[in-house]
Image (cartoon, rainbow over all chains, first blue to last red; front, side):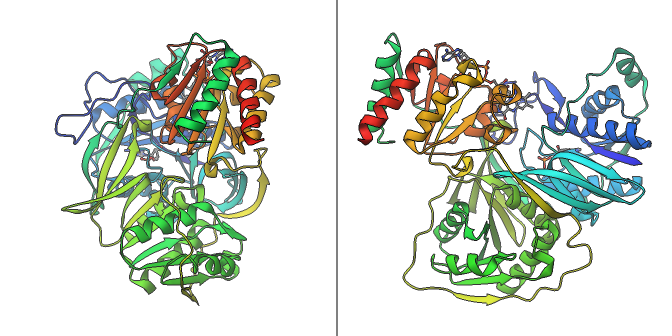
Length: 252
Length: 318
Ligand SMILES: Cc1cc2nc3c(=O)[nH]c(=O)nc-3n(C[C@H](O)[C@H](O)[C@H](O)COP(=O)(O)OP(=O)(O)OC[C@H]3O[C@@H](n4cnc5c(N)ncnc54)[C@H](O)[C@@H]3O)c2cc1C
Ligand SMILES: Nc1ncnc2c1ncn2[C@@H]1O[C@H](COP(=O)(O)O)[C@@H](O)[C@H]1O
């Protein structure tokens, strides 16, 4: 099976975000960059499927040279090949388009990606790739099995109040949610091998008009300082809290 | 014309009331489309809410949920109504239909929007990015624009004086539209109140010390008519079902009141609840980050504070 995994390099969720003076971007220096955590689930799933059915795992990213680090993280986990499409998409449409064009050339049996990238939090790009390649999709998958011989697959996806079972044919696009698996840690030999691995770089095809324009980035509105009850015996604090919520905040 | 994509089974979901409310607030005529085996029921309910037209799409292709068939149906409704803006709920269904429709129409999509405002250049959609640590304000520049709206962020539509017309829309589905369809459903182990729709949520974290103490959370929730939530730490530990997890890997909630007990306030947890209207924290550590987001806080032991709260609510209700 040819499995393609879309991976993105993102700032670690735990790092502080500062916005540029012009409000058009974040300050990119001094951040910790990581492989998007949901893409780790996607890479892990690809490796598990390869162990089961054989084949190759290729990881693909769209981004600047720095994004090679994300590819190397995936290679260190055990991916076989890595491709970087060099370019700066203006929005999700352009990203989805460029990734779809690059994916087409690789003719995968399955495309895995994360449910969302934790920078722009759109949960859109994987689905766009599915649409541009006219493939079935499963989003927020928490379990996945495929039958390469029958060109079919089954998945479970998380929905409000439960889990939905989905049947689909291959090739398909599946986006990974936590719960799908437990991503492995790269081994030391894996890391060494990944360092030497050749990354194929090609120019991005951004041949689609963007549909979203960023006006500005803003920090969250500062919350006004809250009322803190301390140094009260627990039971008194509990009663006082309910009184405040009822009389002051009128929330209950 | 703006188009709202309805959602529900048997009944319209609360989010659809909110999406219609938000659409009407933009000041243009609003059409709605209902897809699936319950389309008729959903359309009848929506027709009372101030929209000018409701379309239904029914048939074997949409008997069970399939995102591509849904997109085909919504695409037909966009053509039929000439809509320039399509609004959906930022739900598990709305998100994937919206994203696929964006590709189909080569349309800009503003995902998980929490506010819409207007400036000289037109409508501006505000959406959280970087796990809620920043907000992006964006414009949709394509001929048709799409937005998904976060549940509980917009006011629900109210019953209107007159009812809208309901019309069945014929759609030519294509082979492949049902590839990737739902074959079944397992009901989660969640509580009675759906988390994303709850007005009040009482959430517990590792500070509860063990699953045996969650009855303290459940009792307060019951007294308040609230839903029960949880941090990832306690879900991963197997104390609570995944359906209750709030945060980036769980549910995004925006209740009127969110009570966090024994939860430290990690970024990934906050990503799921920071748009709550009122946040209350109970934590024994005065330095816990959750207090920075809290409107009301108690520094104390959850096992002492919670029972007193439950008792006080009981007296209030008596
Ligand atoms: C990719 C990724 C995604 C994630 N997604 C999520 C997510 O969706 N949701 C989520 O919640 N987390 C998520 N996390 C995990 C998150 O980083 C935290 O680890 C988690 O939220 C911590 O849970 P907690 O607050 O219950 O536990 P802790 O951080 O251990 O906090 C326990 C708190 O309880 C307090 N406490 C202790 N005893 C008492 C007592 N007797 N009374 C009152 N207070 C007490 C302590 O002071 C402490 O503040 C994610 C992490 C990653 C990397
Ligand atoms: N620039 C990119 N390069 C590779 N994959 C991407 C890129 N952007 C998004 N993706 C994939 O699409 C998923 C959803 O991203 P998003 O729609 O941006 O939230 C991510 O988890 C990745 O798997």
